[in-house]
Length: 436
Image 1 (cartoon, helix red, strand yellow):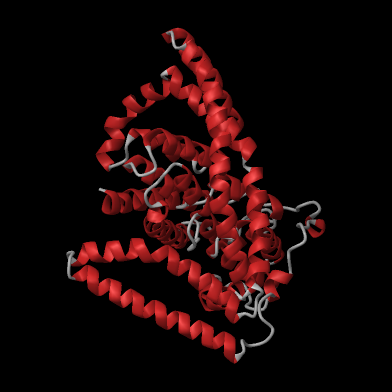
Image 2 (image 1 turned 90 degrees about the vertical axis):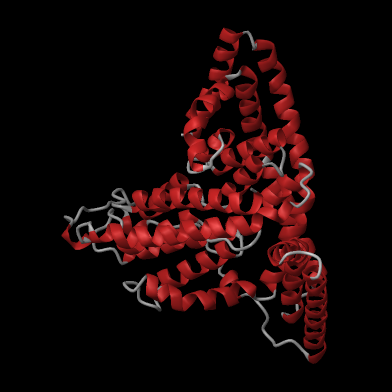
């Protein structure tokens, strides 16, 4: 799908630019777009390296295992048809835990493993079970609780006064999409035939299907011994000092600002530093050599930044050409009167349409909109919030159902699209609440 979208942007720009006399602007936009892509990557490297380094410290300290344990009771309720000790349950728990912590690269192998194991419980191979539908709907609706590192880096590179301002709106929006996904699955399931009612269709090679090796060490990593008295004392001392500082700052703000403004100012000032301190304290409590772990995670961040260069160059050049030709302005002017009725500015429409189709494409469009309209503009905040609200729906369905050899996805796509719409509504409402 992205191939056709990208081709349409390029050819549409050239054709429309030629018809409207904007061909020179289209030509100039090619060079401006590619230069902007490379400049953006250089500016975002620092934030990505730092944040992924911190996440590695917390992961080595046992945070992933703790989150997995916390999720286990909820998982047993969401997937009652999967035996608690079955490998599918373990793989799903680890997939959700890594997603919650924003460790997307580690989440995918667990997701693939989960789908293959769920298929082993499937009485009708090739047809999605209720458990498969629930698993993919939650995956596609995004359940990340950590700050969206790439988005924050783009905002910082564009000169945002508060790059992390979209974190809370993103949490609100992704909560809306995840809840909508679960409700949609339960509702649509009632209108569907039971999977046992479908005819059995032989699936060639079912027993031979496999997935890439899962990083089993993630399931057991973390501290093997409890923190000693010195490390516990450090953790307690830091927490007490932060509590005192937070109370003093809060009292000072309450004396000069209305309660709502005081809470907003306190959250803006303290949220990110507290996150940094919390991740490092997890490492300290987990007996982790924090500096070495930080550097190891930072190398992963550098690899991620390098990998996104080709995607950003291709997308930003195409969008810049489309904008310079005047075609994007025509599209926005046509649809803006309709979308504005529900609080969505027309300038955000490219992001709204592309997000379910391509993660890299949406990331590039987000970067282009932020650079054009400003990171702290309403449309800039909205597209950044949308980036972290849901996953790339069609990619997730294709990847995971392909791993299990599922051809009939039943009601899964409908539930995922409902979650996308709920995420869009939640992101729009949250941005209006926080940014006006």
